[in-house]
Length: 417
Ligand code: RNT
Ligand code: ZN
Image (tube, rainbow, N blue to C red; front, top):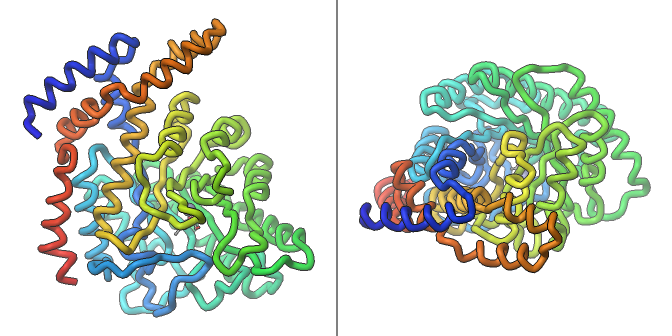
């Protein structure tokens, strides 16, 4: 797109939004401050670099075998940098424990230390990307169906040691980057059939968590992620939403809302205001479930838009951490990152462009027709021109111009893997 056209279209859009009291220049600045936490696992189909040779377990699945998967740390880093070069703003990287630098050595999950992440910390500094972290309970011989909720003390203690080690690593990451690392804990624990006693495993999980969280840290924040069910574990999930919501509210922990982890007709945006009142902050795993927790690439859907709106309406941009969590191996993986990140940014841009004051005033005055009419009109306001301006200002391709960039990277790099 020609630069002059982008500027003129922006000028017209700016006037349209100004008529509603919305300052688009200010919105562009706000949007630029929103950091997404890119999930490292889209680049390699959640494989990691542990040299275990095992397959993905824990009730999650990646479908597809598109060529070009990142096979080692260097490839993964190059892919992430390619993706971020096509996304405006400054972003974070979320690492799983299985992405450490283990060399040719086998380092078991309870032996991991910050040494294995020194390279990542340096890389983050050099590339201006702050790091977030995740413990990894899946894809390991001791994963089974139960980890932190396992009545077998030996197995349970192994995973407690692992999770404690991950918190210590996250704290070091946070300290090194001068900004707390978000440490996400998700365990797949559950069972295929209804267990004899549901309470039993939840009580064990609570005890494990208490033990894990006993050490206070300054530079990391604990996040706990619930789930509806995993594949093969359909009847019972120990760490259900009720479980973690209760735990988070009682013990002041951050609940992670993965948008794929609920009944499909449940509204995740509707949960934001309740969590904000009773838990410290919110961690998001933005995903796209199709019929189940399928982790499709995030697109600009009504659900995503409503989630962004809700966060903006609650004035909670500084309390909500936006992580992404999807994995698609059927298309170009760098393209998948860029589509999902840009869709998320577009949702926040549209949310920021809404004239909250007018909508609130209509509501206060009981002018409900006017409120609905304006909500409808906002859908066709020229937000696209503001988006193009954002890309132009951020020095990233405008519109679909990122497609040839990814094609080029595919031709030169990923297709040769
Ligand atoms: C699984 C959870 C979890 C994982 C990642 C890999 O359903 O969403 O967050 O996707 O940790
Ligand atoms: Zn998730």
